[in-house]
Image (cartoon, rainbow, N blue to C red; front, side):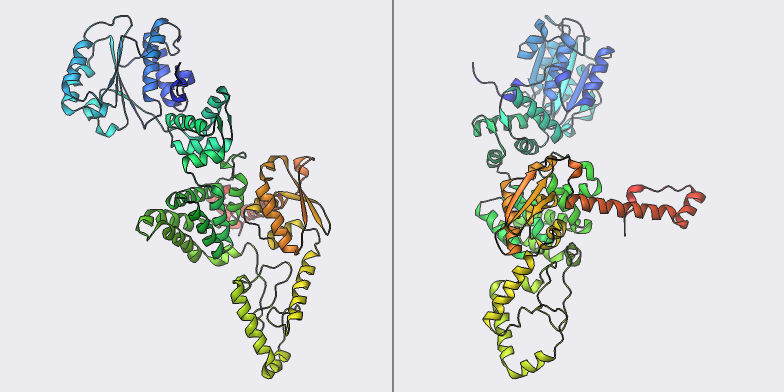
Amino acid sequence: MSYLVLARKYRPKSFDTLVGQPHVVRALTNALTQQRLHHAYLFTGTRGVGKTTIARILAKSLNCETGITATPCGVCNACTEIDRGRFVDMLEVDAASNTQVDAMRELLDNAQYAPTVGRFKVYIIDEVHMLSKSAFNAMLKTLEEPPAHVKFILATTDPQKVPVTVLSRCLQFNLRQMASITITEHLQNVLTQENITYEPAAINLIARAAAGSMRDALSLTDQAIAYGNQTVNETEVRSMLGAIDQTYLFDILYALINQDGAGLIEKALSMQMRNIAFEAALNDLANILHQIAVIQTVPNSIADDYPEHALLMDLAAKLPAETLQLYYQIALLGRRDIGLAPDEYAGFTMSLLRMLAFAPHEKLTAIQPKPSISTQQPLSKPTNNAIPSPIEKQPDLARTNLHDNALRIAESPASETKTSTVETSNPEPSIIEPSNTEQQNNSVENTNAANTSFDGNWRRLVEQNLKLGLARALAQNCEMVSYDDNSITLRVAESQKHLVSPSYQDKLSTAINQYFGKKIKLNVEVGNVHEAEIITPAKQNAAEKATVQSAAEAAIMQDSFVQALMNDFGATIIPNSIKPV
């Protein structure tokens, strides 16, 4: 027997198995139960949402041998023949192929005869908007007052093209696009029945690519099964769909937060090397920014098992709302104008650089305070817990030029006199002041020695000293168990074990090694204790925010002016509107 595609094999055969259209199912089942049957129905909606499927189920409900019912038996001759498309009293007409008035007149001439074996003659006219004006006019009278044994079921993807004279003679039901979560759950059920192994992230990709169409989702799943040789995994689905690896986009957002222009260009070049479509990248970037904005307003709007849950929550805490809106608008405009750019790479990078240029710098850098810099010593070395100054982030060539100039100035007598009279605000040695190479090497060694004097404050190390990027989500959700000069042991809660991936661990280990200036062995455990006992930087931040929020709400409630408004005018306070200053 030939293979039956999933879209046909798992086509719903009753209202109970139909997913995603509860409002239509409720109306039809109540009408069938109460025997309040209309003579003409019109189902509208985009492709693959169930218009023809509902029409067939309704035909079975009207002609089932058990009687008119909302739950057809599915085993009688009428039900089985309708499922096979061979029921003589059900005529399924494709209006796109029968647009002319002659075909409509022939159809209506046969309507006057009684049904052969069924209770009703059911005419299902698909894509009814394709009929000609003459064909519509020919069916108007019959559509308004058909014989008692005739039921019309019309379906269309474009109701705007159906004449209002036809619309007024039908009960109209608008079928909605399927929600991604509905498609995901249905695909998981189908793959389980087919004994196909799958990854939830791959199913999420297919659900998003289907754009609300269950039939498209099942067709893509068929393709993914063939592409992956009886498995459905994220990597292969991304390759099949041409979807963009979200890691690039999250790296870009962290580079924007850190004001790292070189990092932005590096990521764009990597995407170009892999032939990633930049228009689609801007679209996905706007989608991520939308998710972050929703999380900032409704923190519980994203499921805990969502693949990028930790990263989205981390970015929602770091990106100011107004900066987020700016990025979103630039992404939309960049996608619109990318066709006008010299090439897609130029349009994409200019959009990123526009985000970098227009972002409020002080608000992004306020996440981690910069060291105070004396006006008399503009290039002093930062302290252990400070973030390097922008000058220290310049390329090595520029830093070498600054150092050479400083050495030339230091060798002149006038410079020696001036240097001896300068009072420095930082007791540590300056980067540009060493008089010889040996002194400069000692300075670097002292820096590494200072870094290794770790006091065990994991939260301060994560938030102020480590350059983490995507690994920040892992670091924020870890608790330090133990440490010594050569190793650090961390613990992750069971609910966050998805963060313990080799790539995140490598990035975290690299950041720790760079900070301490030597090889530190990193051990990450998935927690053997109760989750409530694991104290992580993320939990500490959340607790501090909750405390500040409670204090703000208490201050508002105790304010005399607010109390007067509540007493005199019956005003009420919306809790979510109170924000700490």
